[in-house]
Length: 495
Image (cartoon, rainbow, N blue to C red; front, top):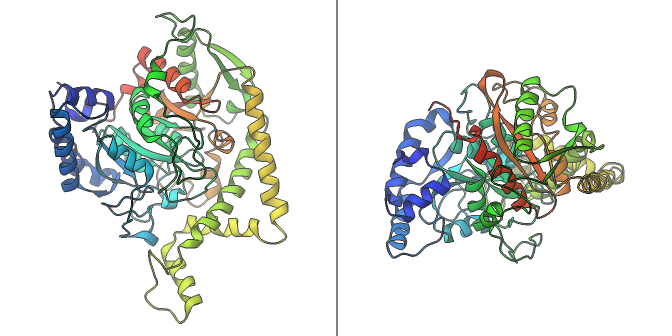
């Protein structure tokens, strides 16, 4: 039998179900690996060893009785943007250092109900604002392929935990690319479902019209198993889509009409937006992405040239809308009800000022200021309203593309992961790295990152797949077919 840390979600679930391995054994093995390696990696903000072993014992009892779900006993961990009643929740910020929620986020509760064993909370950019995990108030996470490089963000800790084989599958969140970009940078698989497929209840809000939960794991199959348990209607979330529960694993395994064993993607049209392959795209990334596309062609897919003409506008649109919503959402952190409060102050206004000055980091303050500005009297119509109009036009561009293709493909990011500290003095440089992920987020479409090799310095490269609304099954099917035919997703850093 393989070492536990070399097993993905599906493989580990099968071993647990057949009783060749217990959840307690798996949990102990992964906790030992975390203890040995995470100091250098910085993936975890909190490890709950005692709680994990107790949950593993409960899972073993269920499995011994022939009960439980497909995920019972499988260790996982949660991005520290989800509130949890049994562990601290910080959102990567000093503002919430030591905070404990009285309830669990819906996504966490559903995975708990499925019998997964949570090992702890994972590092992230403060309030999910960042593309490198360097904005965490506590310490940055490091890319396991090269500790001197960033893992991407904001779900950087989640990506590191999976890539370094500390845990087989985790939760992340994606506002403008925060599942897809770190998945690409660390060589794992991650999917952001259609906006509203997963509940946002208990997810600390950054930008409410963009934030979406999703799984990160080693393969499309692992992600499908996790997403099936995470998703579903939640009446406590006004943006939750009221549709029947989805079995994404079954959708992933479905056979296409006309498909053959050699060509499981026969008849699938994959659109390649010319705007996703600009002159500025790094040659190494382009080479890896083209290799992935060539494999999809071998599997029967047809490549079609399409256009998303407003791609370049996605950055200014996103960085008006997202900060505006962040300015509103983060106004609740004032030191009155919960979270950090300044130790010394003269009056209520002084307490607000000092609390927020001390509790928020530089990037969060920057976005609050931008958001407050664009929402202010005299600027709302000029900036925020215009951005919302352009957002609709960006979504319309995608719908035009989907008349010509079934799936859209391209790079996740223009480059491989950069070195720590690069671009820290120029935040707009990091913003530009989101050029390929932002359009899909603004449109609320499902998207995923699938490993397709390496680029400069041996760093991983991801292929982005974008589907139409509620076509997660189609995306997972496409990614799974690619992963059945290639071994890029099996590559692991030497840890």
